[in-house]
Structure formats: structure tokens, C-alpha cells
Amino acid sequence: MKKIFLLLALLLVFVEPAEAKKDKTTPEQKGLQTINVATAKAHVEFLASDWLKGREAGTEWGHIAGEYLVSVLKLMGATPLMEDGFVQHFDAYSAYNDKTRTYHVAPAKVRQIKTNPHRVAHMRNILAKIDGKNPDEIVVIGAHYDHLGYDPMLAEDQIYNGADDNASGVQAVLQILKAFLSTGMQPEHTVIFALWDGEECGLCGSKYFVNNFADIKKVKGYMNFDMIGRNNMEHRPQQLKYLYLAKDSIYATWLKEDIEKYSLGLDPDFHPSDDLSGGSDQVPFFNAGASVVWYHTDGHADYHKPSDHAERINWEKMVDITKAAFLCMWKMANNPF
Ligand SMILES: [Zn+2]
Image 1 (cartoon, helix red, strand yellow):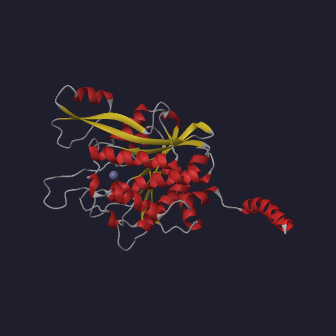
Image 2: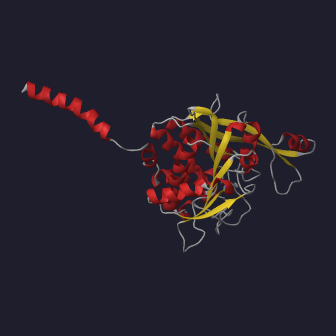
Image 3: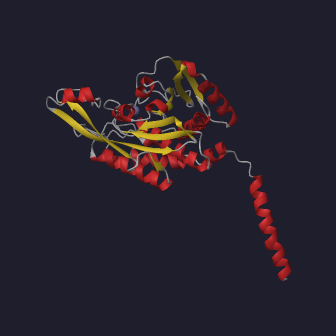
């Protein structure tokens, strides 16, 4: 009897590694397996809840949103970009008579604003990284987490929940970071995962980062998400607006191949362009000369209204965009520029 147990034990010892060797799961497949609707809902439903009162940059609700993101990064075991943690603190300034309430971070403009009565908002980018084998080439993936706050004078719904704009993009950055970590592989290039503050009032977070990041010349590529959760056309629920520089048509090739290979439910409109200097956080990266790609599901009736609610999100499409973006970022992080 003892011999039989010994035999069984020996079999287990030798069979186990053989089983492990049979595991042909690629790093991409390992990453993809971690991206799902349940995780998307967990992030979006919290960030777009009434409790966060619209996450306006510089307010305590904006700071609570930032603290939530820091907690998520810690739970994942992510590495902070800065030596002292995930939070990059900065102040942004707006002139007292600026009716658009646009905030600025460029030093010359700030000096000028400070000569008169002005507003100041304390903002916080949340930044993580995965060190690459070749740290001289960096790619950045980002989405803004701030939104428009709330308006106590509104007669009915007073809170701008910002589920599509841009909790949808935030969940993508968080899920893609988790997917990268799940591959168990170190990428070729360093990857920075960025959650920007103050986009809605002047692209403050992304501008501050680009102006102050010592290694900005090493940043070769930037991937942006701003609103990836809604349907612009009822008859095309899988539609996606895919924007990239015309010289980088490889992004279109990759997306077509990945939709086919991984059966993603996406129907992209390709928008190659020579000028991506408007609209969202890709602007300062475009101006700094990085290769830019961004995902967007276009405008809709709830854009910048209190009705941008989580229950209106097309979860399946948003998660398939997140998967496509992971596959693209994986290639950006591992191929030469
Ligand atoms: Zn936005």
C-alpha cells in the first residue's frame, strides 16, 4: 500500500511540470483573460456615482476619486512612477475674470495670472509604471479622471456623473495595467500608466506632466482614452472612432488584425490625421512629437450633461475597446519605434 502511495506521489511530482509545460497560453492571452465587464462596472459605477459629485478637479470629490485610484493601484501591486508614490501634486491657476474658468499650468501664464485676483486649484495626477528592459524608450497610456462637478442651481439632476466622460477611459487604463502585470513579462520599453486631473478645465494634468517630466524626450508613443462607452449611432452599436497620425498607419493594421484574431465586437472608423492638436490629453504629447493613438466612441445626447450615467454605457463594446487597446499597447511596448 505504501508503495502505491509512493508511486502516486512520484507521478504527481513528474506529471505536474509536464502539465505546466503544455500551457501554450501567450502573454497576450494571459492579459486578455483579466479584462472583463465586471471589473469595468466596479470602476465606472463607483467613479460615476452621485457620491463623487462629478469629480471636479481641485475639489474634495476630485481628491476622493484620486484616492480610490491610488488604492486600486496598491491592490494590484503596481509600481509608482515617483519615488514618493503615485500622486503628482500641482497647482493650476485661473484669472478671476475668466468666465470659461480655464486653468493654466505653463509658468509664464501662471506668473501673469498671479498679478491679479485669481483662482488656484490643487490638482493631482495619478501615475504608475512598469520598467522596461530598455528604459530609454517610454510609452504612456492615459485617461483623465476629473469631470465637471455639480451645479447646485440646476433644477433637477445636479451632478455631472461623467460615466462615459471619462470613467470609461479610466477603467481602460486600470484594466490594461492589470493585464500587463498578468502577462508576467517585462516589456521592452518602459510603460507609464497615467490618470490625469484637470482635463475638463484646460488639459491641466497632461500639460503639467509633459512640461515637467525629465525624460519627455524618451516618450515615443502616447495612447489616449476619452469617452469610449457610448453609441453615437443606434444602427452601429459597435462603432468606434480610431484616431492616429497618418504616418503611423500600423495602428490601423494592428486593430484590423486583432479584431479578426480575437473576435472583438468592434466596427471602427479609421481617422488618420496629420494634426491631433485638439480635443483631449493627447495634445501635449502630439506637440512633444510622440506617436499618438486614441480611442473614442464619439459624441452623444448626454455629452457634458448630468445624464451621462453609468447605466447608459455599452459595457460589451467598452470592454472590447479595452482589449483592443491592451493588444495595441502590448505591441507599442515591445516593438521598436
Ligand atoms: Zn473627457
